[in-house]
Image (cartoon, rainbow, N blue to C red; front, side, top):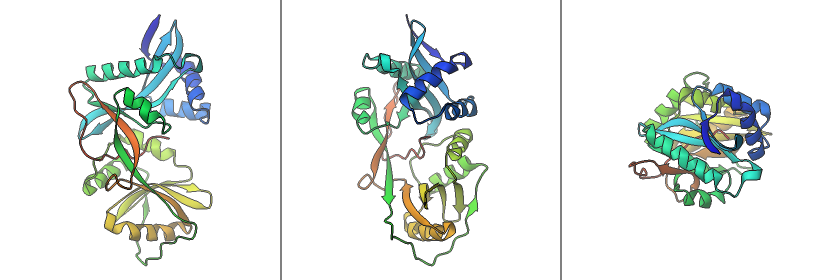
Length: 274
């Protein structure tokens, strides 16, 4: 018998097993931390066959233009059940339940470039973009502009959403709990804010990876120059919202539910909890 269920604590062992099959780099400790940290927000829909878990995906609520949407996360099918259409059936059930709960759409971040084609067959369209700038080893930001940077540990979502609104960036907005969890994933990193922008970063060997830079385009060089001095090391990579799709990479996909239409324009997802 095929059954769809919202997985509770009694199915945590199945969640751990499926997750590790799809994402073997994640430890059991990592998965448990996600489960318990976001237990009040993230829900796991599981497809079982004869009471054996064969496919699952978490849905995490967020908002786009004030409308509730679900982020489809940690989607995986057990190896023994792959290639039989179970995951496609699971996504259809998620879409059906989303519509029943007046959720306007689903969005996700394909785990590999080849999956964009797969999700397109299931009704998803590219909508989210991100610019990634790789900095050369000898590239330094030498502008003399000084900024005062402060570490942010509380109300990160509020400050981040305020910057997105000020910059006029069409973006997913996340809850404080989800943003705090994303912040916890920044290894030896954190969040900084100044009067010119907001930065999420993590250490990467002998340098810094800026996983999100929110600032006006005209201020970007000054902000990076100031950050380079603040960290006293090289900035290796900078990720930022797209100005246009010309230099941006497709980052995520969206599927409308019910009578909702796909939003227009170039959208920014921000973090993806990877």
